Length: 144
Image 1 (cartoon, rainbow, N blue to C red):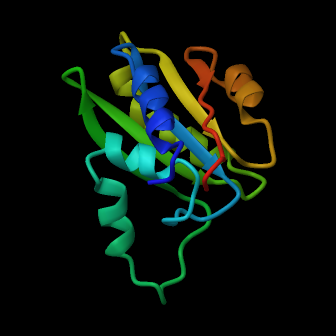
Image 2: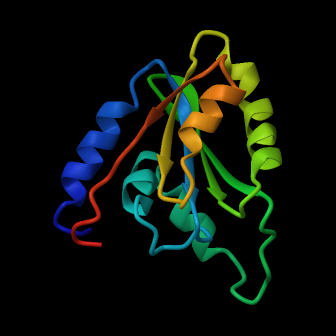
C-alpha cells in the first residue's frame, strides 16, 4: 500500500457510518488493480474486489455498459460498492444500481460517491434521485 493509503483507509472507514447504504465508484477507466481507491475499497469489502479481478479472463472483452457490484456487511447491515465506468451516458447503469439498492433503502439514504471521472456526477445524481443523499468521497492521489 502506498504511504498515504493508511490515512485514506482511515478516512474511508470513517465515512462508512451506519447510515450509509453504499458507494458509487465512478471512473473513466475499467476496474483494474491500478485504480485510485482500490486498496481502500478492497479492504472494506473483505478482499472481494481483488478476488474478482484476479478471476477475470484477461482476453475476454468486458461490457462497457454495466457495473461491477460488491456487497459486504457494515454495522450488521448490507452495504454495496458499485464501480461504474463513465462511458458518457451511464444513466441506465445508474438506474439499474438504484433499483437494486432501493429495497435496502428504507431507513438508510446516504450513498457515497467516489468520482474520478471527467464528469461531475454528484449534481446529476442529486437531481435525478432526490430520495437519496449523495456525499462526495475524496482520496489523495499522492503515492499512486
